[in-house]
Length: 295
Image (cartoon, rainbow, N blue to C red; front, side, top):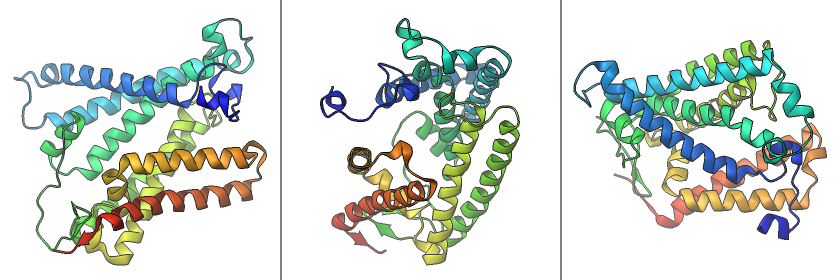
């Protein structure tokens, strides 16, 4: 309602007539909860053992990733080998489903995107099975104890140098694999944000983990003993509501003041770079206001 009242720019071809990004977020959240329930229901059967054996969190992440890839491949096959793509692009808007087909059908891309990002993050940032399991269940996780000097910053305990270097190496490998996946997927169908197809999901993951990789490298070059696992991301995780609200208000300000859909590639790059710096800086400022205490 607020978006309509302030005449916020919306494009029907993005999500549909009545749909928007917040509806997609809600549906992905509900779908992810349902997928978590399914994965943990499958686990005892996969192990053929009593529930929650010692290795179950590792297997949970793997099952979640495989199910997400399976959904993506089925969706992409339908886009490539049926009239689904033409339906999304050209069908008349005669009822609720057809009026919001972009938002509804793109859930088959966005839900696997979220679940794959979650599974990869669990594998990269949580070294111990217990930690991954707690994260998958939505429980509070604390950093696993590690040998070596650590730093407490804004109430967070960061990782030592050796662990940070291993993380950088893993991120380089994962980013490279994701870029190869995007290249392969783009030969199947061109990257489409509107379709949220396989190539778009692979590109989004590749860009996201490449950015995390660059942040990890920057933390490593700037003093790896203070990376935990990545200082900027840890601060965003520590102040999620503050960062989220600032990012959304900034997004609204940009979209209200600029005609972003017609911006040139150079202008878009400049705007996105400034936006990213501002969002990360907001988390840094929140951490600074809370205070830092080296240990």
